[in-house]
Length: 268
Ligand SMILES: NC(=O)c1ccc[n+]([C@@H]2O[C@H](COP(=O)([O-])OP(=O)(O)OC[C@H]3O[C@@H](n4cnc5c(N)ncnc54)[C@H](OP(=O)(O)O)[C@@H]3O)[C@@H](O)[C@H]2O)c1
Image (cartoon, rainbow, N blue to C red):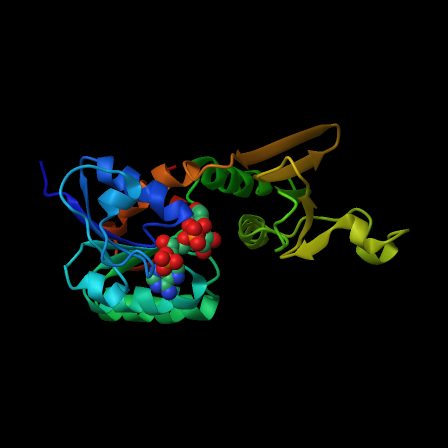
C-alpha cells in the first residue's frame, strides 16, 4: 500500500471541519496529522472530537501547523484568513483543498500564480456535496439542449445572503453555456419585475427563505409540453460535505496550478 496522504485541517473543530476530521481520521489512505483552531490550540483533536489513536495536535495558526510537514492542507476556516492560510501552505510546499467560501476571483488569480510558482496545486470547491456537484454538472449538460431554464434556491429563514453561493455558482456556470431565453422580456413584464427573480449571468434566480428548509437548489428547464427538474437538497448535518472533500484531498495532487469545482477532477 502507498504511504497515506498526510492531512492538516485548518478549522478542524468547526461545524464542517469536525465532520471532515472524523472522515479523514477513519479513511485508510489518509492520515490526519494536525488541525488549526485558535480557541482549542494546545489541545488534541482526539479529546475534542472523541477520536482514538495517536495524538493529533491542534495549533493556533496555519504557520505553526505547517511546520509539521503535510501533503495536503485543507482550508475550512473563515474568508478573512483563508487567502493568507492558502498562500502560507503553498509556500510551505503543501497542496491545498479550499472549502471556505467567499474568496474573490482576484484572490484566486493570486493563489493560482503562487501555486504555479511553487509547482503545487489548489482545488477549490464551493460545495463538496456530491449531489450538488452532480446537479450542477447535469444542469450544464441540459442547458446545451434546452434553451429555457430558471433556478430556485431554497434555504432556512435565517440565511441572509441571497442567492446562495451554490445558486450563484450554478448561474455563472450556465451563463458560460448560454443565456436562458425569456419569452416575455423583463421590460415588458406587467407587474413588479422582482416577481421574475434576479437575472444573474443570463438566468432568472429566485430565492426562497422559509422555516422547514435547510439548503436546496433546483434548475427547472422547460420546452413546449415538457419539463425537466434537477434538484439537490442537503439535510442539516455536515455529512454531505465529507465524501466530496475526501475525494478532493485524494485528487488535489494529480495536477499543478488551480482547479475549481469537484467535477474538474471527476470523470464523466
Ligand atoms: N465547500 C463546502 O462544501 C462547504 C461546506 C460547509 C461549509 N463551508 C464553508 O466553510 C467555512 C467554515 O464553515 P463552518 O460552518 O465549519 O464554520 P465554523 O463552524 O465557524 O468553524 C470555523 C473553524 O475555523 C476556525 N477558525 C476560524 N477563524 C480562524 C482563524 N482566524 N484562525 C484559525 N482558525 C480559525 C474555528 O476555530 P476557532 O474559532 O477556535 O479559531 C473553527 O474550527 C465557511 O466559509 C463555510 O461557508 C463550505
